Length: 79
Image 1 (tube, rainbow, N blue to C red):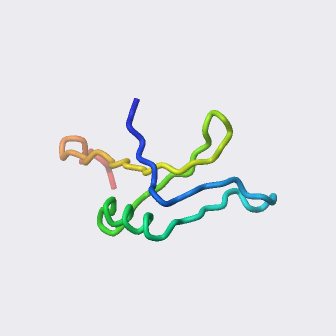
Image 2: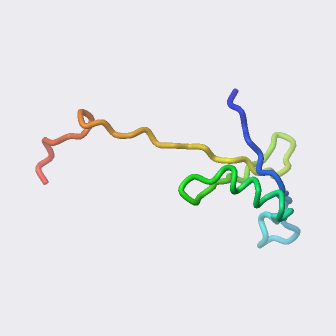
């Protein structure tokens, strides 16, 4: 199983009305430090997920697409 990194200083709760899906709170000093430590090119991606117990939580998204190699590019396209 992959190691999940949870944003420090960020709390996610379910919204309390139909049109509010989630409420997010930040403990500014902790969250700023976590952002600074985890930023790549000025960005940090975070996913809001649903636990097996039905509670919302946040996790850092580390997805990086694989680079396309020259041999995978199809040069036979007619356009």
